Image (cartoon, rainbow, N blue to C red; front, side, top):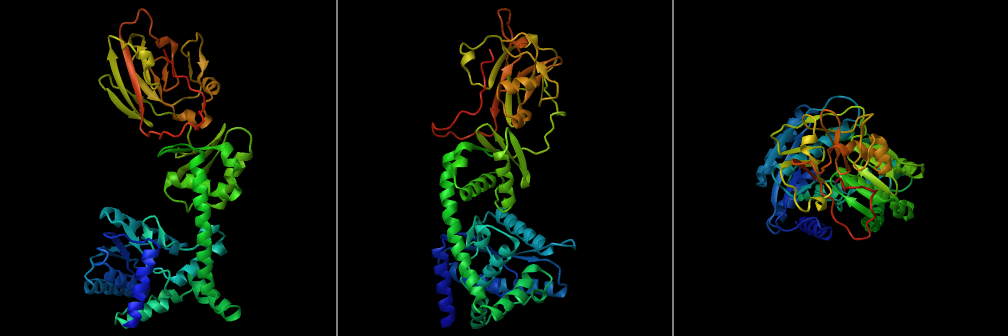
Length: 483
């Protein structure tokens, strides 16, 4: 019992020092039935009253080991009954083929996260121990990784916590023996079908026998050092990221290119990864080659763009670097047309909410209203209105001019970034372009002394960009004085 009390005290200390819990937390516990996850369940069952925790165990049956998989599931049921912890069981089927281990891992995390969201829990706790940390660090080193990969498994990352990283598997098994708690052994861990198993069963024992019997311990210690270095650079880079951030929304991130290039190379990597994560929610898919590709467009002349995983586009335009969720296969040759019904007063298209109102009298301040509001002569419209994106060959007569101008040339003159042009809604009637949203009205729709019926169109961006300090640079040149 002395061993149990010692480990429980270390466990609580680890939880407090790493800031893994707050009183009242609701935790999902990933329970496989192995010694590590069984110890995790036992230790949290001891902490739940002092921390006022709500616990929910989740067991995933991969159905890969026949009767043994069913036996694991049955054991976990009995274990949760013993400790009075509710249990959810999910059965999954994996297609045979390569990368089975990684595909299973990804699916497990998806299930844990879906349960967490469905039941409105706070965190997911998993039972990875100190030697898992060592194996992960070595595996990442062999595959090729940066500081983040060499720091191995994080004690906490977003909603995921790993409270057992300070314990070896032998310590956890001794704890279970002292409490007379059995566990399940997964015989597949002894089979060298997966890379991690080969590291555990072949490479690490070879290095321990030949070079250093403390090899796993040194790996785990090194992971901790790399974590501290990664955290230091991450925090430093985040401060710089906030300074050079020009605009941010759910769809786009704008960075000051000149200030970015002044940062050390390692900080540039962290800054760019932060922008990527801000849009897609994860940083794991931002690799070193992603950084190299972005550096390539920074060194090239003119506006350039590249595509990254998860549908993220990175564009260099003028003095900005823009991360966007816009699909990389935008084609200006085709455009979905949204026909507007005469009785509709509101409609959502692209990233805007449009409202329409017919007037007999203009507001006194109509020339001073918001830039995304336009007034036009309703009687000069030909047929019904529609909204679309640009098409090759589009022409219109910009307000204040007398001749047709290619829309492409207009965008160039107005310094509208090349890859933003497909994102601008264009109003058309049966004969002509009516309004280039946020840019210019067609001169043929302008209000004059003969006008007596007016149409007001207002555009409200769905994703409002936060206001920033006065140091923000002006992006491009937009003229909003349609009338």
